[in-house]
Image 1 (tube, one colour):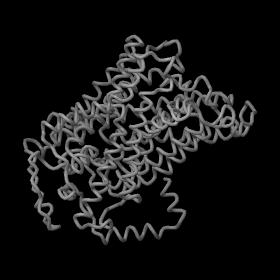
Image 2 (image 1 turned 135 degrees about the vertical axis):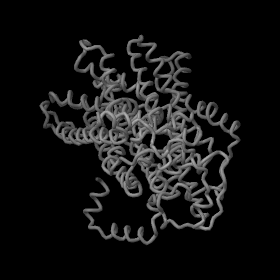
Image 3 (image 1 turned 90 degrees about the vertical axis):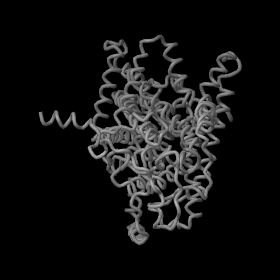
Image 4 (image 1 turned 180 degrees about the horizontal axis):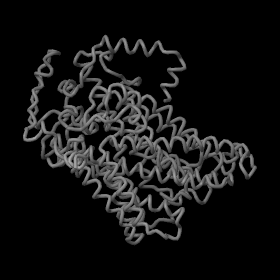
Length: 571
């Protein structure tokens, strides 16, 4: 009975928080040490007051955060979506666009790492935009980001049941059974709170990393003629059928696909409030992004492009069909048995990993919005184990849409396509807001007489890196408009009705963000764009570290042997 009692009690709120009204913050008290006068906010407690008020538990260790950063960006976008990109733009545009977006992502993650290390707050994306730009921007971006992850869970459950068809083409086990099994598994993982999410992502990411490394080795063997087919390939696919396809439309389309393939890396910022030592672990994860992107994306895709010609008819034939994966196609070209099934299993793990991340991201974002008055108060509830239960339950209930697999193909596709369209550019908008928030934070930090040396960790690209990242994300939005208005399949293949549908499914998220979220909040709440001089750069800072300590840590890091610096940069 003791174990059962502890289990039941875990769902109750913290004893210390029961029947206690959240205190009104007095910024003057917090900022008196720096000689600044605080400004009272009539909209409630200040944004980013830390996880002490949110009730979330700091259960994530360094290994969890690092693999969340890695695993969040390795999924179906790489394993399957890259096939459609290869077919659309050819190997040349595939490599150019993935490298360009990878550099942009580096700027975004570095900016996020700096902000998250000094302000490790719950729902950091909404908090940073609300605090450093405009509450209306934070509101619009947060709801769009929440909707994105809310929609992802049923989509991934459906996808997982489709992936299973690789081994069960005759549906001996109905797909609905698999949807139920996967939904129950994700529910159980989330019952263990943030630690359960962290362990699941650690294991899932480890599997994906080993799979990509294994493929790189196998791909080199296939290319060099060491596979059972015995054919040396070299760079023949770059000459015949060629390196580039569909001209500027091909470049633009792959550019957009590459941006979405990297989605999920920003989850390290969302996890900052539940990390044991965010000051050290978040920057460490951020610094390793570039090396990991270079290895797991650029190298693996280059090897794929030297084996699979972009004219292969199976490329891009299905969003979640393992047979459309360029990795599986490459292994089949090498005539290696068993490995296609292993790769399909990795794709299944990736799909379920994204589904698990969807529940985490949606619940934490909704809980954070509720805590700052931008969502119903019921979602502020966090139990003794640090689980935002109402937000988690809502996310899991939405997963029941996965049973739409029993609807007709047309009805199911219409529902999911339009649900995805609502938040289609959510990740890009989030990345752009992160860069803008960081740039404005840097300006406010300097305006208040602080030096960069006082930051617990600073982005090596600084203000200009965020400007570059924000501009590049805006460019992605422009290219999305272009490829939505002028799709490659236009002219004789698409009817006017189909072209209109294609445009709105590709770009409708922008007018929704502006017309449904931003403008109504702006008028109802009368929020205003925050001047640089009024930006609060103190509230929410967790235990500011003395400059002397930071100097000593940086000197120790600078004196490390070269091989240790290289290892730390990669691992």
